[in-house]
Amino acid sequence: FGGYRVVSPLPGDGPSNPLTKAVVADAGAWLANFRAHPALALVPLLGIVGPLLAALGFRARHEGLTFLASSLGIACIIATVGLSMFPVILPSNTHPGHALTVFDASSSRATLRNMLIATVIFLPIILAYTAWVYRVLWGKVSDRDITAPG
Image (cartoon, rainbow, N blue to C red; front, top):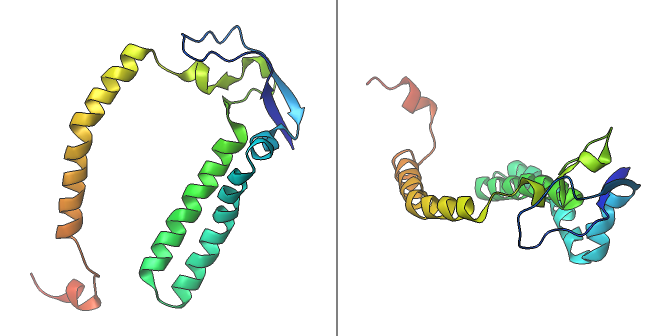
């Protein structure tokens, strides 16, 4: 499988300019991050093990294990794609130099600061509401609950 590799210096702390970077298509480049950081190989491995554990948990009727293993598997499968492509997040098959990197897609410092402030304010509200809904709707629904009047 081909991958993409950035061959120009990446901006570390200044505004990015998508026109100044150079990205090339390279065979096997999607494995570069795993070669550079071997511990990352654990992520795709857990992406395989998670669904297998979920199937075993389902068969043994362990709902908690099934939920956690399924969640772990899905998260690791998605993370594997991100780790394989980083820093390229939107490759271009026709013009590799037009690929979008994480650094090209980043916002300005002011925008990031404003979003941090909004997150600090609204995330606790959203988490509190989610916890309340989870507590209210806690438990399994049985046939008796569905057929009971009122």
